[in-house]
Length: 472
Image (cartoon, rainbow, N blue to C red; front, side):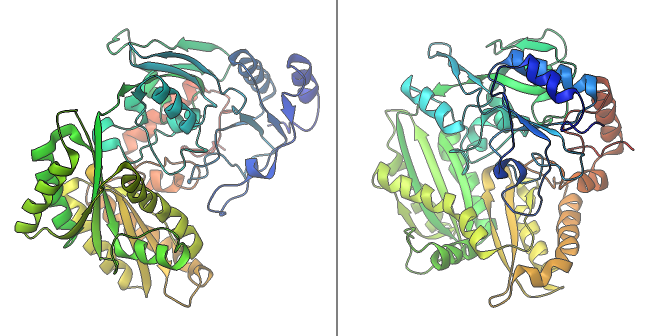
């Protein structure tokens, strides 16, 4: 592949694009949030329209220049940084950040790929609607990247992953053609569903430039509570009871371990904690109900039943929207506290709901067999997605355990695979998890993925090395 910093490629591309579309990359374009991988780049392309994206990809394809799509840079598996490529072109969609249309009556919104998630949420709210995709990085994550990785977040239990909130896409192919697929239909069986093929493909099959997004009516009344539970099995039993009583009124059901609360106390004491002593396990329940239903009364009734059954021993129910926001601020601060402590190994995994307690017990035991560590387990219990993160014992640094990272990951991922789970629940494969996909993925599925990649990107210019290993 050519180095885009050399030869005629840059001159030809600069002549075909408006002034300012080509720039020198900034440090943020070459880093990933966990600091474990640094990328390379020959040039940064910042198109302002889908036509400019098409020009860039046509030129890159003709010159065999690798292209690394870049959204908000919040991905945690290295999909947005490439150290192994010979100075690729980084394609940032940050200038394509317009809300093209909002249709409250049709519960739809069209956003360009560079729109920040929080801005899409505000546009929906201004129209009296809700765009329910929600995650800790929503102030910087962009729609294109969220769809490219099929992001999850806290609302999957009720509203699904990013793919479930997407009605249509506009995509530029590897050879610079534009697929105009921004229909806002709930039913459309006209052939293969290319939308779902592109969502989750991490920029390896095409570049998402805009999306039709599904909006929902805003819940008339919202509420939240923190319940102290005996253990993960009690949390799972409580979820079952909550769903029996409240059905789809449950917007989120989060499991929070005591280690995360202690990390918060140590690193972010300004975050208000609900209990004098951090419990070993608690759950955050969030409700969105019709006008006729009282969230506080529903949560009080649920707690009374849970306490009688021995599932919950203490609890706090939000008395106001401000207190509900405090509960969520606590939950969303846990990843930042993790970064301040410094992890040895992080795991974004999912297992069948019934296997969650078994996974936690067995994973803890597997790690204890190789050393003394602290485990911070938290996540989206309602959909079986846990963040099971390993930290050094007090007084030790993560650098002291660097030689154990691979063994820790293998033990955890082997257990996940044995239980019928996934070693990448909501963060994608990127470059970090390519060996894991090869180890645990179904061979037939991997072969089909390679066939699709070769058909849609025969020259291998789109995010090479992400999801699938580069060909020799």
